[in-house]
Image (tube, rainbow over all chains, first blue to last red; front, side, top):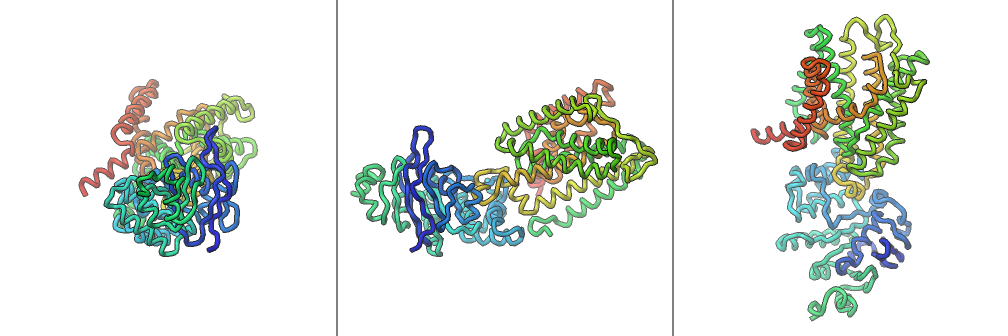
Length: 241
Length: 325
């Protein structure tokens, strides 16, 4: 598998706090990489560094071999990296389809085409029936789908999902997981941050575990799940037992 | 071409009827005063629409738009006075000057978000006002008289016999502002501006160059505002910093849009149709002291709007329609 994303030794400090310390990992084409770690481990900071929302103090981020380290978020987005946010950011004054059209406009200036592409994206995430509703009336689970559709509408090469099931009620989780699995099955390359262990261990081909800003394990889910350092820092003995 | 976001036939018909009524107005009302009131409504609806492009659609609340109004008024007047250029050319140059100024202001000021942006625009407005008061070549605090040209002509944009021509020119400017806003509203730019208003980070994550689009919205808004400024100069024939650069003017432009409903196409016209006659009426009714009374009423209206319906009258109307429909 060739490398789509290559993160090389990125470091991010906030004053005395090192949020990301010399983090390196790769994502291949069509791969689904899960990122786990306790709160404050630096998972969302890592997303911010990859997508340009925070500048890295050291290290490089390469997309298909080209550095995107110093680029702005919108430039990185136009190079094919889309993301969702842990704290959801729907455009609440716009309708659902208009939200997604904003993403679709990245590849077209024609409103008709943008609308068609937005409807396709909504169809993929199962939200087509809510197209004309205002985004503010959606439930958390629906908002997650909306953000996913919006990101998909930019036709990304790499999709970063921050907490797919966070804040979503138990009943809605399986459908969201199926959705991510289906996107992966269709060939999408994904990085997923997730706290729900049965979910992330089930869908990921590889897991990168972070603790206190450092990578403490990187490998197949079965191996990372038994790694003593990961168990110590995050999973706890109960998980292994 | 405005597909799903297009207007139904009913709305086009209503807009057509309104336009016919506006065209017929000066034929029915031949006295100067009613014409003056409606010209002022057109002017402020146009200014509020220009402001709306930046503040309503893009969410960047400017309280310094008098800078662009003044830039238009002074550019056309100075070019007429010193170089004998037609006000129409002056108007075009004024728009260019306003765009240049807007980009200079925008570059540092757009780094600020929310209230800080609004405060910075007030500061810029005050700085420009003070500069103009001290700039002798441009008339300083005494101001400038627009050179009188006779006979009345469209080329000179001066009509001393009747306000009818001013009326149609003001209406033309208003239609231009509406047309541009509508074009923006249904285009990619309109979607991008609203996305920036809602959440800048989400907008950037979808590939929108946020700073560049804010600058574009500011440029368009400044250019339209400057056209209004040049028109004002030709209509009143006298300008000074106090009449075209005051913060009070920036705030009135904002109030008109806020009352009518920001981020909507019709809000600015509705706001102007209410506030401007109100100001005229209080001035007449209370005489010289009426100026303060209209400010009192504006203040009360704004408090009412913010408490009861922050979306302005347009949002009230939409709420009413949902209830009845």
